[in-house]
Image (cartoon, rainbow, N blue to C red; front, top):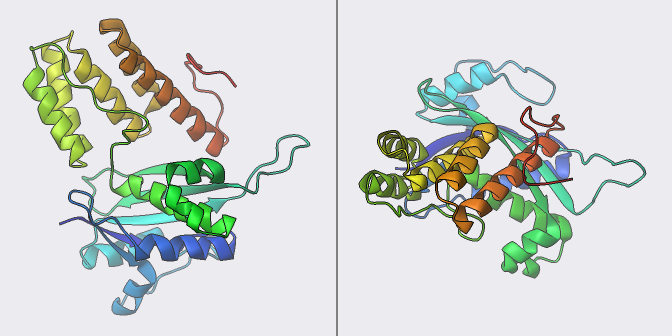
Length: 274
């Protein structure tokens, strides 16, 4: 059974925020290992004797919503906000760019919570999802692409066009690396990381385990650790694949920092430039 998620009202410009929420709930992934059961949190409220107190003008209290979602058997509470595009100097904001900030709260205290920005550029999105060219409205193209990208927060998937899991070259620790790879393909990154950590600790030159741990760290937005692991994998075994992953992780970190207007990381940038 897939994860059960209560989706709170997406805030931001009303027209586009409403489109994102409706599409997000209407068409969740159903393929094996990525199934999602999504529900509008508003539909849970009438069933509850708890009165949901407004935390702000636009959103209900997380504590109250989490209480309702827990009683109804949901695993997570998800909130989204459409962020306004910032101008850069005299250059106007890009109308073909859409940024959403998601906050995922685990109902079970033993599960992981986290946040993630989704940044969509319309032309790049149409290249990645060619069927979007059939949608005539540019805003609707960006909304459709943003919804597809947003599912990755809840239903992890491997993007073979960008980065792939490494297969072990060395025999020592091979079985644990392969078990971790299989868990990751099922979307269970937590279990995958346990296998890869075991292989890396018991066999320090098992570069595939180190490389894949870098991907797991990036998936949880721990980009500084991800970069450290990726660079270690390159030192262990300088395969072009590991070098590409190092670049990919830093690009993902830069996108994260720019989406939330964060300062440069303490370790700086190693392989990319503004």
